[in-house]
Image (cartoon, rainbow, N blue to C red; front, side, top):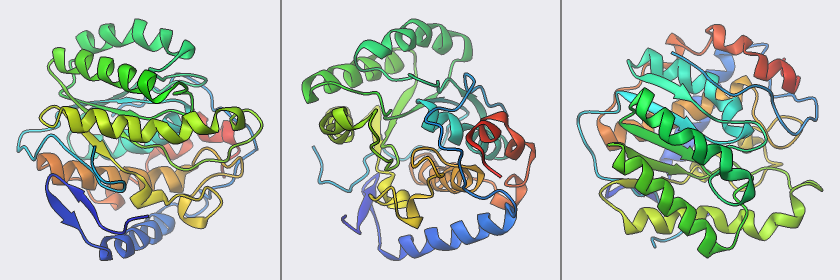
Length: 279
């Protein structure tokens, strides 16, 4: 993995990675008793409504702005759904309205499982009126690179026409069990397909490479996966929320709230974690 990432034209030096370790330690102290341990289930429950071509390894963004986000819509599958409670708490603490439509068993925009997303998204964009939409590449974005790029192009067009900017976020590394293994090649090409679409629309679409936080090995401690090897528990989700807030600061001038303001909030008891067997 390239240890130098960029965002909005500014380099992120290797020492940033040491900073992530310190963030993880701080979140760990705040979430004593909320360890990343899972029940082995693949999917979490509920519909995830939490309130409150560049070089590989590089982020891209629409360019830093000083006026957002004010309303953030979060999209993804059950992996994103497990991250949503922490992300919602962090955004709320930072003064951002937050809504998640991350969905168990789907939530993607590519292939046969995407129909519910395309049916719901225009309605959500109209009712919630976000200024930024963040889409985490799902574990179900199965298709050829051309099909993936076509779907991400459609997503960008739909979001941009609604007056919002799109951030495409790579997924954390996850265990390729018997369910996912037949789609390994498609899972591997999805983030690069998303990166290419962001490069084609530099003013309205950004790409965030989350391997800077999670690494590339789902079995490593850095990945902070639960015992099922796929989702995150409270501690990993909080670490993601901190990381994501830093990216928003770089790209929009957003000032994230300190983790100690939200990391031990009621979100830690969300049912998504109990269904995953998190402590």
